[in-house]
Length: 214
Image: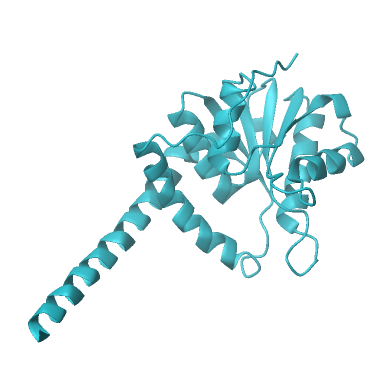
């Protein structure tokens, strides 16, 4: 019995080590493949018809403003006002009546002076994969600039390009590294999950009819 338990422990230990190695490799490879397409500088980016603004909640669980949200809004506003884009798809979670990331983003962008008719809402961006793939399949955009923080853009750009899109990332200002510890740790696992999604051909939760952006 003691020998069996010892062997089981060895198997679990090997699996844990393999899992850690895979997560490290997934993070390295995604960063490496996307690094040429993400930038903090608007001048590095091409002109495109559309940008995709990835959603997050405007407030934290403690009720404080979410810096990730407001930094993304500022980046989207700056990009639009630079003339590099004509439309912004705001894609996020609207899984309940009281939580609506796309509407919150639309309102914040309008307050920044972005015309409301230049903002396209996607209420089914429950995951980064959903937002990216729906931009192509529903909104028929094959070339676009994705707006989020650098760590998030790396994953989104990787996903977009694996799905045949010509995607570039405009990096919004990050938050204090201590304030973002939980988010950054979650991102390590999210980057590993990208390969799982690609391997099994995971698709967005919702499809729908095509939406034409003029």
